[in-house]
Amino acid sequence: MIDMREDETRAAADGPIALAIIIPVFQESANIAELAARLAAVLEGVAWEAIFVDDNSPDGTADAARALARTDRRIRVIERVGRRGLASAVIEGMLATAAPLVAVIDGDLQHDEALLPRMLAAMEADPALDLAIGSRFVAGGSDAGLSDKRAAQSRLATRLSRGAIGADLKDPMSGFFMARIETIREVLPRLSAIGFKILLDIFTSARRPLKFVELPYAFRSRGAGASKLDRAIAFEYLVMLYDKAFGRIVPARFALFSAIGALGVAVHFAFLTAMFQGANTSFAAAQAVATLGAMTFNFALNNSLTYRDRQLRGPKQLLKGWLSFCVVCSVGALANVGVATWLFETRHALWTLSALAGIAVGAVWNFALSSRFTWSRF
Ligand code: GDD
Ligand code: MN
Image (cartoon, rainbow, N blue to C red):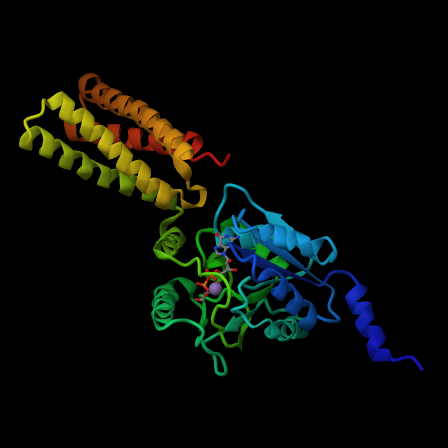
Protein backbone atom coordinates (compact mmCIF):
# COMPACT_ATOMS: atom_id res chain seq x y z
CA MET A 1 0.00 0.00 0.00
CA ILE A 2 1.23 3.47 -0.85
CA ASP A 3 1.48 5.91 1.98
CA MET A 4 -0.01 9.01 0.38
CA ARG A 5 1.19 11.38 3.05
CA GLU A 6 4.76 10.36 2.77
CA ASP A 7 4.63 10.63 -1.03
CA GLU A 8 3.23 14.15 -0.92
CA THR A 9 5.88 15.15 1.53
CA ARG A 10 8.63 13.85 -0.68
CA ALA A 11 7.15 15.55 -3.73
CA ALA A 12 7.11 18.85 -1.85
CA ALA A 13 10.69 18.54 -0.66
CA ASP A 14 11.96 17.59 -4.13
CA GLY A 15 9.71 19.99 -6.00
CA PRO A 16 10.40 23.52 -7.11
CA ILE A 17 11.96 25.65 -4.46
CA ALA A 18 9.33 27.11 -2.13
CA LEU A 19 11.19 29.02 0.52
CA ALA A 20 14.53 30.73 1.05
CA ILE A 21 15.72 31.45 4.57
CA ILE A 22 17.98 34.49 4.63
CA ILE A 23 20.37 34.58 7.58
CA PRO A 24 22.47 37.70 8.10
CA VAL A 25 25.57 36.69 10.04
CA PHE A 26 28.53 38.51 11.45
CA GLN A 27 30.88 36.69 13.83
CA GLU A 28 28.50 33.78 14.32
CA SER A 29 30.78 30.84 13.46
CA ALA A 30 29.77 29.00 16.63
CA ASN A 31 26.06 29.12 15.73
CA ILE A 32 26.01 28.21 12.04
CA ALA A 33 25.91 24.41 12.22
CA GLU A 34 23.34 24.34 14.99
CA LEU A 35 21.03 26.73 13.15
CA ALA A 36 21.32 24.76 9.90
CA ALA A 37 20.47 21.54 11.73
CA ARG A 38 17.44 23.13 13.38
CA LEU A 39 16.21 24.53 10.05
CA ALA A 40 16.51 21.12 8.43
CA ALA A 41 14.49 19.62 11.28
CA VAL A 42 11.62 22.11 11.32
CA LEU A 43 11.41 22.42 7.52
CA GLU A 44 11.17 18.75 6.75
CA GLY A 45 8.99 18.24 3.72
CA VAL A 46 9.52 21.77 2.42
CA ALA A 47 11.70 22.61 -0.60
CA TRP A 48 13.87 25.21 1.11
CA GLU A 49 17.28 26.74 0.87
CA ALA A 50 19.18 28.77 3.43
CA ILE A 51 21.41 31.67 2.41
CA PHE A 52 23.94 32.83 4.96
CA VAL A 53 25.04 36.39 4.21
CA ASP A 54 28.31 37.15 5.95
CA ASP A 55 30.32 40.35 5.86
CA ASN A 56 33.74 38.76 5.83
CA SER A 57 33.70 38.02 9.57
CA PRO A 58 37.19 37.53 11.00
CA ASP A 59 36.02 34.49 13.00
CA GLY A 60 35.51 32.31 9.93
CA THR A 61 31.72 32.47 9.84
CA ALA A 62 31.62 32.15 6.05
CA ASP A 63 33.99 29.17 6.16
CA ALA A 64 31.75 27.46 8.70
CA ALA A 65 28.77 27.96 6.40
CA ARG A 66 30.71 26.82 3.31
CA ALA A 67 31.78 23.67 5.13
CA LEU A 68 28.09 22.76 5.47
CA ALA A 69 27.27 23.88 1.94
CA ARG A 70 29.78 21.45 0.46
CA THR A 71 27.69 18.49 1.52
CA ASP A 72 24.24 20.05 1.69
CA ARG A 73 23.10 21.80 -1.49
CA ARG A 74 20.28 23.55 0.37
CA ILE A 75 22.86 25.68 2.15
CA ARG A 76 24.31 28.67 0.31
CA VAL A 77 26.72 31.42 1.25
CA ILE A 78 27.14 35.02 0.19
CA GLU A 79 30.26 36.68 1.46
CA ARG A 80 30.61 40.42 1.10
CA VAL A 81 33.97 42.08 1.41
CA GLY A 82 34.50 45.67 2.50
CA ARG A 83 30.81 46.07 3.39
CA ARG A 84 28.82 46.00 6.61
CA GLY A 85 25.17 46.17 7.46
CA LEU A 86 22.39 43.87 8.50
CA ALA A 87 19.63 45.38 6.35
CA SER A 88 21.71 45.45 3.18
CA ALA A 89 22.91 41.88 3.84
CA VAL A 90 19.30 40.71 4.07
CA ILE A 91 18.35 42.48 0.84
CA GLU A 92 21.26 40.94 -1.03
CA GLY A 93 20.29 37.52 0.25
CA MET A 94 16.71 38.03 -0.90
CA LEU A 95 17.88 39.04 -4.35
CA ALA A 96 19.98 35.91 -4.66
CA THR A 97 17.13 33.41 -4.55
CA ALA A 98 14.53 32.20 -7.03
CA ALA A 99 12.16 31.14 -4.25
CA PRO A 100 8.71 32.78 -4.19
CA LEU A 101 8.85 33.14 -0.40
CA VAL A 102 11.70 34.49 1.69
CA ALA A 103 12.14 34.39 5.44
CA VAL A 104 14.65 36.30 7.53
CA ILE A 105 16.01 34.90 10.77
CA ASP A 106 18.94 35.91 12.97
CA GLY A 107 21.95 33.63 12.87
CA ASP A 108 22.43 33.57 16.64
CA LEU A 109 19.54 31.23 17.56
CA GLN A 110 17.61 33.98 19.36
CA HIS A 111 14.64 33.65 17.02
CA ASP A 112 12.47 30.56 17.42
CA GLU A 113 12.84 28.62 14.16
CA ALA A 114 9.81 26.47 15.11
CA LEU A 115 7.68 29.41 14.01
CA LEU A 116 8.79 29.05 10.37
CA PRO A 117 6.32 26.29 9.42
CA ARG A 118 3.49 28.34 10.89
CA MET A 119 4.59 31.41 8.93
CA LEU A 120 4.68 29.26 5.82
CA ALA A 121 1.20 27.87 6.49
CA ALA A 122 -0.15 31.40 6.96
CA MET A 123 1.40 32.56 3.69
CA GLU A 124 0.11 29.56 1.79
CA ALA A 125 -3.37 29.86 3.24
CA ASP A 126 -3.82 33.47 2.13
CA PRO A 127 -2.34 34.49 -1.24
CA ALA A 128 -3.07 38.15 -0.45
CA LEU A 129 -0.88 38.07 2.64
CA ASP A 130 2.35 40.04 2.12
CA LEU A 131 4.12 39.12 5.34
CA ALA A 132 3.97 36.79 8.31
CA ILE A 133 5.89 38.38 11.16
CA GLY A 134 7.39 36.84 14.27
CA SER A 135 6.27 39.10 17.09
CA ARG A 136 7.37 39.47 20.69
CA PHE A 137 4.44 41.70 21.53
CA VAL A 138 1.29 39.82 20.60
CA ALA A 139 -0.37 37.45 23.05
CA GLY A 140 1.89 34.46 23.57
CA GLY A 141 5.10 36.23 22.57
CA SER A 142 7.84 37.53 24.85
CA ASP A 143 11.10 39.42 24.84
CA ALA A 144 12.44 37.75 27.97
CA GLY A 145 15.68 36.94 26.14
CA LEU A 146 16.61 40.61 25.98
CA SER A 147 18.31 42.36 28.88
CA ASP A 148 16.17 45.01 30.61
CA LYS A 149 18.23 47.75 29.02
CA ARG A 150 17.95 46.30 25.52
CA ALA A 151 14.22 45.69 25.97
CA ALA A 152 13.73 49.34 26.98
CA GLN A 153 15.76 50.52 23.97
CA SER A 154 13.73 48.31 21.68
CA ARG A 155 10.48 49.73 23.05
CA LEU A 156 11.73 53.29 22.60
CA ALA A 157 12.70 52.51 19.00
CA THR A 158 9.24 51.02 18.46
CA ARG A 159 7.59 54.16 19.77
CA LEU A 160 9.76 56.37 17.54
CA SER A 161 8.70 54.38 14.50
CA ARG A 162 4.97 54.67 15.18
CA GLY A 163 4.40 57.72 13.02
CA ALA A 164 6.45 56.40 10.12
CA ILE A 165 4.70 53.06 9.68
CA GLY A 166 1.02 53.82 9.42
CA ALA A 167 0.11 50.23 10.30
CA ASP A 168 -0.80 48.68 13.59
CA LEU A 169 2.31 46.59 13.84
CA LYS A 170 3.09 45.46 17.37
CA ASP A 171 6.71 44.52 16.71
CA PRO A 172 8.07 46.62 13.85
CA MET A 173 11.62 46.04 15.17
CA SER A 174 11.32 42.34 14.50
CA GLY A 175 14.07 40.85 12.39
CA PHE A 176 12.16 37.60 12.05
CA PHE A 177 9.53 37.36 9.31
CA MET A 178 8.48 35.75 6.04
CA ALA A 179 7.53 37.71 2.94
CA ARG A 180 6.38 37.17 -0.58
CA ILE A 181 9.26 37.96 -2.93
CA GLU A 182 6.95 40.03 -5.18
CA THR A 183 6.22 42.29 -2.23
CA ILE A 184 9.93 42.70 -1.63
CA ARG A 185 10.56 43.50 -5.29
CA GLU A 186 7.73 46.00 -5.22
CA VAL A 187 9.31 48.03 -2.38
CA LEU A 188 12.92 47.38 -3.38
CA PRO A 189 13.64 50.64 -5.24
CA ARG A 190 12.58 52.67 -2.20
CA LEU A 191 14.35 50.73 0.55
CA SER A 192 16.88 52.69 2.60
CA ALA A 193 18.92 49.58 3.40
CA ILE A 194 20.47 51.44 6.31
CA GLY A 195 21.15 49.81 9.66
CA PHE A 196 19.34 46.96 11.42
CA LYS A 197 15.64 47.38 10.86
CA ILE A 198 14.77 45.84 7.53
CA LEU A 199 11.13 45.12 8.40
CA LEU A 200 10.48 48.75 9.29
CA ASP A 201 12.24 49.72 6.08
CA ILE A 202 9.89 47.48 4.09
CA PHE A 203 6.76 48.89 5.72
CA THR A 204 7.79 52.51 5.32
CA SER A 205 8.82 51.92 1.70
CA ALA A 206 5.49 50.44 0.65
CA ARG A 207 3.09 52.61 -1.33
CA ARG A 208 0.06 50.62 -0.26
CA PRO A 209 -1.00 49.10 3.06
CA LEU A 210 0.74 45.74 3.40
CA LYS A 211 -1.27 42.78 4.55
CA PHE A 212 0.40 41.01 7.45
CA VAL A 213 -0.14 38.74 10.43
CA GLU A 214 1.91 38.74 13.60
CA LEU A 215 2.63 35.36 15.10
CA PRO A 216 3.88 35.18 18.68
CA TYR A 217 7.28 33.76 19.63
CA ALA A 218 9.57 34.03 22.60
CA PHE A 219 12.81 35.86 21.90
CA ARG A 220 15.58 33.72 23.36
CA SER A 221 18.71 34.85 25.12
CA ARG A 222 21.92 34.62 23.18
CA GLY A 223 24.18 31.60 23.57
CA ALA A 224 27.46 31.92 21.69
CA GLY A 225 28.78 35.20 20.30
CA ALA A 226 27.84 38.79 21.07
CA SER A 227 25.19 41.24 19.87
CA LYS A 228 26.26 43.68 17.17
CA LEU A 229 23.86 46.34 18.39
CA ASP A 230 25.92 49.26 19.65
CA ARG A 231 25.63 53.02 19.83
CA ALA A 232 26.45 53.46 16.16
CA ILE A 233 23.65 51.04 15.22
CA ALA A 234 21.21 52.99 17.38
CA PHE A 235 22.37 56.12 15.59
CA GLU A 236 21.90 54.43 12.22
CA TYR A 237 18.32 53.77 13.23
CA LEU A 238 17.72 57.51 13.54
CA VAL A 239 19.42 58.03 10.19
CA MET A 240 17.01 55.54 8.65
CA LEU A 241 14.00 57.33 10.12
CA TYR A 242 15.41 60.59 8.75
CA ASP A 243 15.92 58.97 5.36
CA LYS A 244 12.29 57.86 5.30
CA ALA A 245 11.00 61.32 6.22
CA PHE A 246 13.31 63.67 4.29
CA GLY A 247 15.66 61.48 2.29
CA ARG A 248 14.02 62.47 -0.97
CA ILE A 249 14.75 66.15 -0.37
CA VAL A 250 18.24 65.90 1.10
CA PRO A 251 19.83 62.41 1.05
CA ALA A 252 20.66 61.10 4.52
CA ARG A 253 24.34 60.66 3.81
CA PHE A 254 24.74 64.20 2.50
CA ALA A 255 22.79 65.64 5.43
CA LEU A 256 25.03 63.79 7.85
CA PHE A 257 28.17 64.79 6.01
CA SER A 258 27.09 68.45 6.08
CA ALA A 259 26.13 68.35 9.77
CA ILE A 260 29.53 66.91 10.59
CA GLY A 261 31.09 69.61 8.40
CA ALA A 262 29.30 72.25 10.47
CA LEU A 263 30.69 70.69 13.65
CA GLY A 264 34.09 70.82 11.96
CA VAL A 265 33.77 74.61 11.74
CA ALA A 266 33.33 74.71 15.52
CA VAL A 267 36.41 72.53 15.95
CA HIS A 268 38.29 74.84 13.62
CA PHE A 269 37.43 77.87 15.74
CA ALA A 270 38.32 76.06 18.94
CA PHE A 271 41.84 75.37 17.60
CA LEU A 272 42.19 78.83 16.16
CA THR A 273 41.11 80.60 19.33
CA ALA A 274 43.31 78.46 21.53
CA MET A 275 46.43 79.01 19.43
CA PHE A 276 45.99 82.51 18.02
CA GLN A 277 44.31 84.14 21.00
CA GLY A 278 45.53 81.89 23.78
CA ALA A 279 49.04 80.89 22.80
CA ASN A 280 50.10 83.82 20.60
CA THR A 281 50.80 81.63 17.58
CA SER A 282 50.96 83.49 14.26
CA PHE A 283 47.59 83.65 12.51
CA ALA A 284 48.80 81.64 9.51
CA ALA A 285 50.20 78.84 11.67
CA ALA A 286 47.12 78.77 13.89
CA GLN A 287 44.83 78.74 10.86
CA ALA A 288 46.82 75.90 9.28
CA VAL A 289 46.69 73.77 12.41
CA ALA A 290 42.99 74.54 12.88
CA THR A 291 42.30 73.48 9.28
CA LEU A 292 44.14 70.19 9.72
CA GLY A 293 42.46 69.61 13.06
CA ALA A 294 39.01 70.20 11.61
CA MET A 295 39.71 67.97 8.60
CA THR A 296 40.94 65.17 10.85
CA PHE A 297 37.90 65.54 13.08
CA ASN A 298 35.59 65.42 10.05
CA PHE A 299 37.41 62.44 8.62
CA ALA A 300 37.08 60.50 11.89
CA LEU A 301 33.38 61.25 12.34
CA ASN A 302 32.46 60.55 8.74
CA ASN A 303 34.42 57.33 8.90
CA SER A 304 32.55 56.07 11.95
CA LEU A 305 29.08 57.45 11.14
CA THR A 306 28.45 58.61 7.58
CA TYR A 307 30.42 55.78 6.02
CA ARG A 308 30.07 53.19 8.73
CA ASP A 309 29.09 50.62 6.13
CA ARG A 310 32.41 51.16 4.34
CA GLN A 311 34.45 52.05 7.41
CA LEU A 312 38.21 52.24 6.91
CA ARG A 313 40.15 50.30 9.53
CA GLY A 314 43.77 49.65 10.41
CA PRO A 315 46.69 52.11 10.18
CA LYS A 316 47.27 51.69 6.44
CA GLN A 317 43.67 52.21 5.32
CA LEU A 318 43.19 55.04 7.79
CA LEU A 319 46.31 56.90 6.72
CA LYS A 320 45.45 56.55 3.05
CA GLY A 321 41.87 57.60 3.69
CA TRP A 322 42.89 60.58 5.81
CA LEU A 323 45.36 61.77 3.16
CA SER A 324 42.85 61.50 0.33
CA PHE A 325 40.23 63.25 2.48
CA CYS A 326 42.64 66.14 3.16
CA VAL A 327 43.42 66.46 -0.56
CA VAL A 328 39.74 66.39 -1.51
CA CYS A 329 38.87 68.99 1.13
CA SER A 330 41.74 71.26 0.13
CA VAL A 331 40.47 71.35 -3.43
CA GLY A 332 36.96 71.84 -2.02
CA ALA A 333 38.20 74.82 -0.05
CA LEU A 334 39.74 76.34 -3.19
CA ALA A 335 36.45 75.84 -5.04
CA ASN A 336 34.60 77.39 -2.12
CA VAL A 337 36.80 80.49 -2.06
CA GLY A 338 36.82 80.71 -5.86
CA VAL A 339 33.04 80.62 -6.23
CA ALA A 340 32.40 82.97 -3.30
CA THR A 341 34.96 85.50 -4.53
CA TRP A 342 33.67 85.35 -8.08
CA LEU A 343 30.07 85.93 -6.91
CA PHE A 344 31.04 88.77 -4.63
CA GLU A 345 33.55 90.57 -6.81
CA THR A 346 32.29 89.94 -10.32
CA ARG A 347 28.58 89.42 -9.84
CA HIS A 348 28.31 91.84 -6.89
CA ALA A 349 26.24 89.44 -4.84
CA LEU A 350 25.68 90.03 -1.12
CA TRP A 351 28.75 88.97 0.85
CA THR A 352 26.70 86.61 3.03
CA LEU A 353 25.08 84.96 0.02
CA SER A 354 28.42 84.70 -1.73
CA ALA A 355 29.90 82.99 1.30
CA LEU A 356 26.96 80.56 1.60
CA ALA A 357 27.15 79.68 -2.09
CA GLY A 358 30.87 79.01 -1.69
CA ILE A 359 30.22 76.79 1.31
CA ALA A 360 27.50 74.88 -0.58
CA VAL A 361 29.79 74.27 -3.55
CA GLY A 362 32.61 73.17 -1.25
CA ALA A 363 30.31 70.81 0.66
CA VAL A 364 28.96 69.16 -2.48
CA TRP A 365 32.47 68.83 -3.87
CA ASN A 366 33.86 67.33 -0.67
CA PHE A 367 30.94 64.95 -0.40
CA ALA A 368 31.01 63.78 -3.99
CA LEU A 369 34.76 63.31 -4.20
CA SER A 370 35.32 61.80 -0.77
CA SER A 371 32.60 59.23 -1.42
CA ARG A 372 34.41 58.39 -4.63
CA PHE A 373 38.03 58.46 -3.46
CA THR A 374 38.14 58.20 0.34
CA TRP A 375 35.28 55.79 0.95
CA SER A 376 35.11 54.08 -2.42
CA ARG A 377 33.85 50.55 -2.02
CA PHE A 378 36.99 48.90 -3.24
N1 GDD B 1 25.95 40.19 7.40
C1 GDD B 1 25.80 40.90 8.54
N2 GDD B 1 26.35 42.16 8.59
N3 GDD B 1 25.12 40.40 9.58
C2 GDD B 1 25.00 41.13 10.70
C3 GDD B 1 25.55 42.43 10.82
C4 GDD B 1 26.26 42.95 9.69
O1 GDD B 1 26.78 44.08 9.69
N4 GDD B 1 25.26 42.90 12.05
C5 GDD B 1 24.56 41.94 12.68
N5 GDD B 1 24.40 40.87 11.88
C6 GDD B 1 23.70 39.61 12.18
C7 GDD B 1 24.11 38.94 13.46
O2 GDD B 1 25.21 38.08 13.29
C8 GDD B 1 22.84 38.20 13.85
O3 GDD B 1 22.76 36.98 13.16
C9 GDD B 1 21.75 39.12 13.35
O4 GDD B 1 22.34 39.92 12.33
C10 GDD B 1 21.18 40.01 14.47
O5 GDD B 1 22.21 40.72 15.08
P1 GDD B 1 22.34 40.81 16.70
O6 GDD B 1 23.50 41.68 16.99
O7 GDD B 1 22.28 39.45 17.30
O8 GDD B 1 21.00 41.60 17.00
P2 GDD B 1 20.23 41.75 18.38
O9 GDD B 1 20.07 40.45 19.04
O10 GDD B 1 20.79 42.85 19.17
O11 GDD B 1 18.86 42.31 17.79
C11 GDD B 1 17.86 41.48 17.45
O12 GDD B 1 16.68 41.94 18.03
C12 GDD B 1 15.90 42.80 17.33
C13 GDD B 1 14.62 42.99 18.07
O13 GDD B 1 14.65 44.19 18.71
C14 GDD B 1 17.77 41.23 15.96
O14 GDD B 1 17.04 40.05 15.83
C15 GDD B 1 16.99 42.15 15.22
O15 GDD B 1 16.81 41.63 13.90
C16 GDD B 1 15.68 42.31 15.93
O16 GDD B 1 14.94 43.20 15.21
MN1 MN C 1 20.89 38.62 18.50
